[in-house]
Amino acid sequence: MVPRFITLSESISFRDLHQCILQLLPKPGSRVLDVGAGTGRDAAALAEMGHDVVAVEPMKAFLEAAIANHRSPRISWRSDSLPDLGSLTSDQDGFDFVLCHAVWQHLDDAERVRAIERIAALLAPRGVFALALRHGPAGAGRRYFPASAERTIEMAESVGLKPELCLENQVSAIPGKSNVRWTRLAFRK
Image (spheres, rainbow, N blue to C red):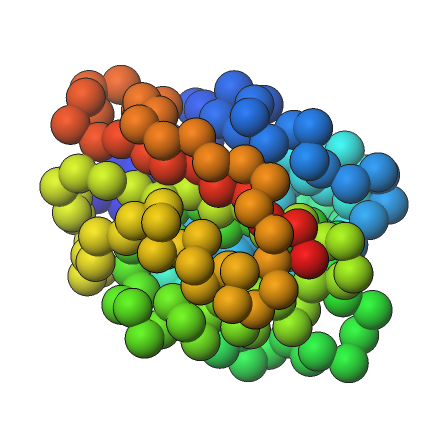
């Protein structure tokens, strides 16, 4: 399952997958956090754009593949996860952009509250938090908790994050996943 997922994930381009948030990316040289970095595809693309990326991934197999396949001095790889992101400190300058793709469904509601508080604390002023909510069957892997755009927006607003983007019912980029839809959200601090 893991090798197949890695191959599928790497076959999708960052620009195709994240077209709707490209205009929200900061200027090159910005600090970016990729939460749930998976195979490293997004972290690598962001580093190639000139960003300094901290890529966080809890699954050992994905983290090892990401490090092996995407070597860049602009990427700092971390074994960590939401809701706490304990390897990161809030006393730094903050991140200009936080990407959280295909992670939110693994957190229950209480963990999401803690996670959004943590992300808000890690964001620099005017920083952007972009995430994708998965809708459909759980699929393989970890636990799955459905998430709604409305509840996620409420959580974000409660910690001072203003909605910038809400695109619902987006098709899956992975072929054969017609029963999976996505909601793309972005917030600004």
